[in-house]
Length: 149
Image (cartoon, rainbow, N blue to C red; front, side):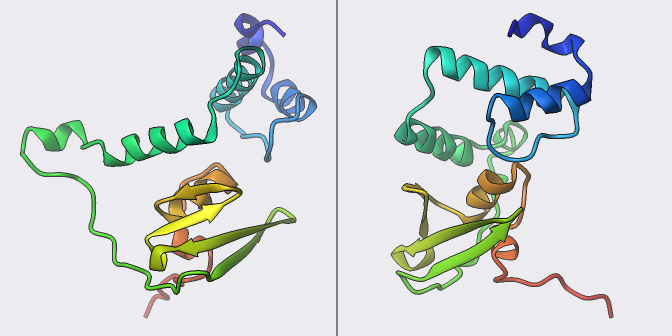
């Protein structure tokens, strides 16, 4: 597969290719996301993927980087997260698209282990599972949506 010709395919063709080459998860519905995901997959197969520790460090660096707009004002854009106060050793279970996902709580809810990788938040894990941004506590059923009055 030539990376330079991926954009010439239709969205349906790219979704078929996504499944044929064995990319985990459901294919996106947007052509640009399909092209990027397939290109990443093919390049990582050819040149080698990032190891788990490197991925963890990159995610931590991204999470800790200040928003460029907030730097000029001297504040950080990150919100203070209220701790979940989950007992260490608790296992959170969520079924997503027919697959069972288990997350182990570490350090009294300050860290989490999913598939032999440690994460600082449930939201990171929810994004890993779904490919979309989720509130981690909501995804794992720890917080419910507020009902309108």
